[in-house]
Image (cartoon, rainbow, N blue to C red; front, side, top):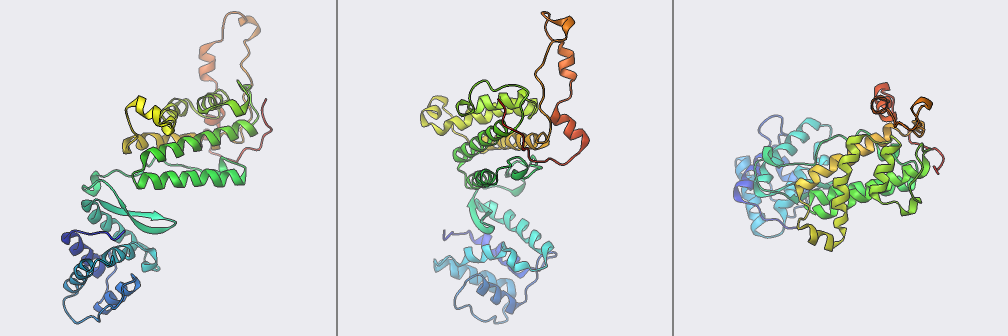
Length: 323
């Protein structure tokens, strides 16, 4: 993208390249020249004995003025794992410091296919900037989706949502998350034994129907059911007229709220993947015509809570299709 960086940014980048402070990776003068070559620079001069930081800084400024994108190449090389063979501590320290420098300039390091890339972000101090919500996804997609082809598609949606988030495409990200959520819930409704029959044919069930159905069968907890409404609402903004009526476009805060919902739902689905179906509620003979005991219903353990208490690893469900 041939980025232009502030002179103070280049000065700090030169410090990182030299690596004078522990635990950064220290480079001698000739090693700095070799670093620029590995970054893809052409015609790198030999180190001439000038103080290392001054020499690196002046080269960065000179190459940026040439407009060839060499300063960006040097920054991306600093963030490349290949530069730190068997030096994991140095890599993580450099990446952390690099993002602290870049965020002041409205950029940071992201990833695309495992390779470092520069992405735009809100300028500010690193401690003040927000990152992808860290409500942990404790399972892999294959623990939730037993069909390998569908699992690959779901994983791709998850990866694309992350890419959209990192690049500020928040509407696209939330649409990806809603699509993913609907897909995994439809898969569960298709393959699992059900204690509660479907309200309509599966092909006619929307995201709201699928969330309610999963909750009624105790595949997801009540918090995931309630919060999924938020994802459903914003997923509907795939229709531009819906966004116009709402008068609000998804932003970073929207994703910070929606992403944990998806993680929680996937965690619940994995925890209940091997659990038996919950039988439909039947009133005891003495209670017929007088309603269910609400206390008994509230105290009955769900498959999700049982699986969590047992601490057993989730296994992808392979039950027969429900009716």
